Image (cartoon, rainbow, N blue to C red; front, side, top):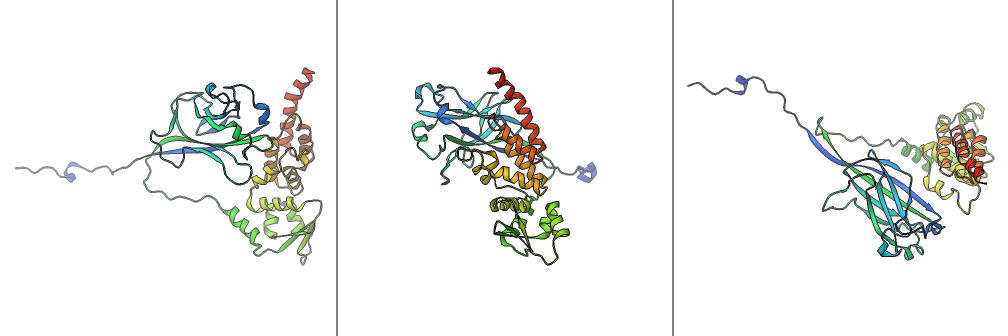
Length: 347
């Protein structure tokens, strides 16, 4: 009787392979600032104010705010807020979060979220362009108007979208996570602790400790002042024509390569700050030009660009011209050509 063939008799087998299906979300956020809330009231039930579109997970989205509510049966008792799919797509599955920001600083935000909780039916599915998820009864309007969510006739709504995606990973079941870059955090600790600092900047009597190598590496102007002009034994440089808080914000950028967003937002144009040139962003733009900090200049341009309006474009254009902000100047000129001409035609 002959024996059954063994594996070796049958020939070589191909190596075993594996694959893995990974379902996760691509997350992104957008902040929608609604100024002039009291003027938006009365526009009518079912009528909304829309945010600019923003892209997350390959799809465009928009936030719809209904100051008089979306549901006729509620008789404007509630404001309504929805997230809408603003681009072509079918059966887009996503998680959502809507946050009404507490502007008192207490952190008591009103949050409606799919994230971090069990969903019996899974993520929400938007069938087609224009499909929405949200709340007809997002917040009782009478309570909203006496709350810390409304400040200076302004509301702020944060929206987070997590678009569900499924991918096949055929490479390996074992991965090693690489942490995000943290060099800015390390340099920031040097600044905060003043460890091994070897130079002092005197700004209107307030003294800031820093490191010659860092300052010279980040700014060609500081490099010239420190390496070529400064006396070898001199440990202090006097900075004229700059406010201490502006120099401090610039130092934060030099060491961390980032701006303090909350500080810029707090000093952006408002009823208490009528002039663009008085904002922290405008003053940092001046500092960036003075010390040839190209990336800081571009960040300031980006922030100021958001404040361009018919009333502010002339001021911002003047700043852009004065501080060599070419990108911002171009945007101002384009805005003026498109909008101011229309105003002249209407007169």
